[in-house]
Image (tube, rainbow, N blue to C red; front, side, top):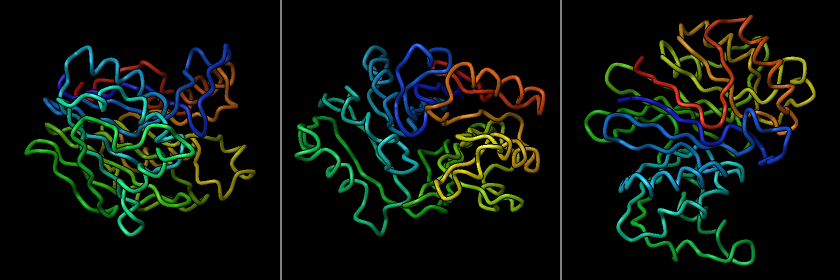
Length: 275
């Protein structure tokens, strides 16, 4: 597949490996996007560890890592991404929320410093290149992949991404909080006409009032936004750790009845964006 996304981690907040989180997965946020010859990783939650094994097995030499933000559940898998310990590999790391806050290299270095982690960033052997931008800018990954970005509503900031390749578009919109009855214009503009939107669906509409200010949204709001923006498909993503397989199966059924374009992301699932 020339343009596809594979889910390596679909959980939000904290990893939850348990017998009750098998069907949908317990690893935190990490996506693998293949766009032609470009290998793109989105977020570095615990799911990136398994992705690292694939990168090694397939001999992928160069990757790009796009970070939505740097809360623990989106970066704590980074030191366990095996390719960064090999000299002959390279990784370009982008973040759009730290331009005026020390930059992504400083934040990753801090997260890997004593006494919270024993292996410092400087010990990694791969060629790491750090890029700080401001959410809202457009990035170009070579001549054939365009990445549009937008600021999201989340504590400490977060960045939404739209990857465009060969006339198709996929969007990654997490972590973000909506305001009921007020469609987020940043999100609507970013996702308009997209083939696939991966959306922060941590809560249901019934749960949301108890979590105002926590920085997350609902699958129902995602459906409303996607319908308004003429999106083809939406992946329900960033599952709350308290939403076990039984709960998510009910969400999956309700979502399918609400809009045929909605489905629940599962760890290990691959979606062909070019289809």
